[in-house]
Image (cartoon, rainbow, N blue to C red; front, side, top):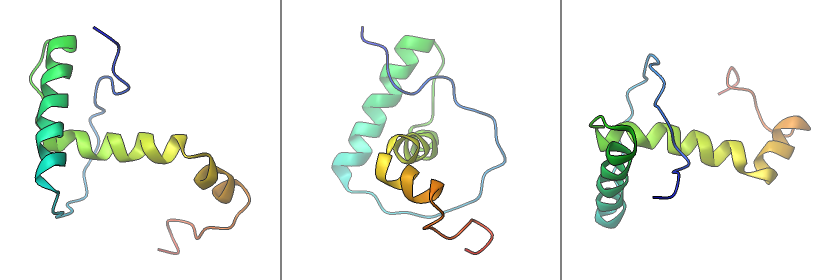
Length: 79
């Protein structure tokens, strides 16, 4: 089985956000969680995958990283 991009999920204090997902995305989250379960051996709530997936996406987006590095984006404090 190929190695998935997400590994063990960090235990971090969450901020609650309500979001509506297309049904196809939700189905894929369920399948991804099942794949991680097979790879790591422990059940994972599919909704717990959303934050690490978003973080991974932003961390690997070269354009976003460049804009942050060059100071073209507001900081988290500026909101």
